[in-house]
Image (tube, rainbow, N blue to C red):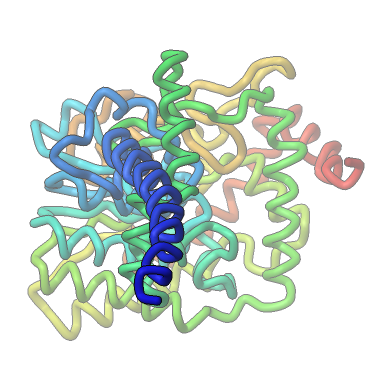
Length: 406
């Protein structure tokens, strides 16, 4: 009887081994490929190859990829913000003088996400400085974490099963899909959207700038103006996130450079034409300044300057290009300055020589005592833009609602 049972068990065992061994071998192969290619920087191992650094598809899972970048290397400084920083701020400029800088900005990122990213990076690096761009309208936006961006699947998330996420980064099918994408980029010698330092420099919108304004920038201007007409109350979680960033920088002795990134005058005009209730963003600016003043009063040894680049300065009023041209020298579209303007911003904030004489007076260092004068300056810039760039302003007004025709 025992012999009969044994003979019945043997084929079952052979079947089990014949099934599980090939499956195990496939999983090991996937894990090896995922860690060798390391497509999102989160599966770094001693055998990870740097041959793929320029070809990683970070744009497919940006929160995961930027967090992976933060923990894969030793950084001296980081740059944080939305796509404005993602595109505009170059971490490889010679003025960094050998300091290792990562651009950890996130498309559609919010202050809550910037705090999470800074905390994540500061826990793994001895950061000397951080540059943070705070978008106007973020403080009054109800979105703390933008839905559908992959934040909860990234190492930045504090909820969920952390071990499960780490296993997925190594042997998950989604990671393997990114591995195959990276291998294809490498085979075709087609670099990915992001540099190994995290800046978005490729795969930008290839449409002419006027088309992007018509069907993207003006759509967002309409969205934000409508949202703000309902309420321009400040989101308490955004204020707490800003306080958290200041506190973390103070505790970790990280020098924080804080700025309000610019918009092109065409976009600023669209916000006003759409009836924004606070077109000079008094609410946003006053609350940022109040938090900074509160921090300095509680900790007199700390000083964080706020640089404000969002106005009708001539560089933000750069004439719109011809209908078929992709972008201007300084602007990709209505909300995204290109690296030449980002270089000027960084120079102004960090005290470098300004690389273009036209930017010698670009931006102002904003204080509570200067706020009223600053708002008058911004309001006065609007009619000046209409007069000095009448053709561009007329084009904005004519095409403001084109996105509704699609």
